[in-house]
Image 1 (cartoon, rainbow, N blue to C red):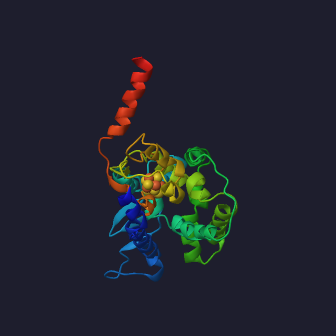
Image 2 (image 1 turned 120 degrees about the horizontal axis):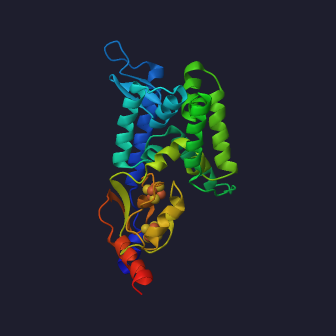
Image 3 (image 1 turned 180 degrees about the vertical axis):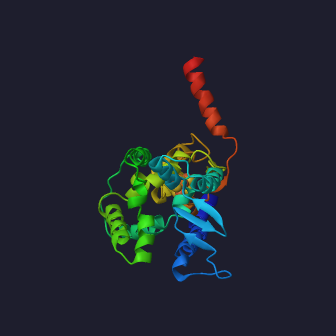
Length: 292
Ligand code: SF4
Ligand code: SF4
């Protein structure tokens, strides 16, 4: 216990947050680079947006944009699908929603504006975090029915890029509406509940090699990790309640904030292995209901 109290007092380097903010800054610069015409041997080594781009001639496409375009045009777009497959395989290997916390520039902005809540009490209306999956499905159906890639028309990322290139205001107005929604309706509401791109990545979020892991010998049940979770705090509950060793929920985006803020270092991001607590809980339930 004394050991735990000493750890509580120790000031720690928030290494996952630092690493993530460096990556977020790099991604922002990278995607703004076409605006300042970075050139390699007379040609841009990179051009495009987060929806569709090319790096040294390799096409990279957001899988959700590729799906919308394919459904809207009712034709197989091999260029789009090839680029989408590369991105899909990457996130399926790491963990789906890692895009949201490490790459998406809208999340970068919303994380910054969320800090206003540290100083001013603002409303926070919770919603079902699966709503964004339903919105993603509706977006795909609408794209097929009306022949337009629906989300790409209103996407805050795409519109912001277009606004910067064409010096229009539509992208900035969409982003402003999202920021206001997060501040006056629901904390982190866009990323947690509404963004269909996040919904698409949530739908593959059970895949991936990495997970947040609990050390139940250290955990005090203080709920500090819940209070900082960039996704939904409830995804940490099975771990805190010792039902699982890992945060297995598809919504975890591996932001690492829970790891950095746990006062006793009970959390880590690691390769997922066999989960003995989950198995023993399952065996206990089976014993209770089927072998009684
Ligand atoms: S894992 Fe969460 S509940 Fe447990 S000690 Fe760390 S911050 Fe507190
Ligand atoms: S569980 Fe941890 S790593 Fe996952 S989203 Fe929440 S704070 Fe981030």
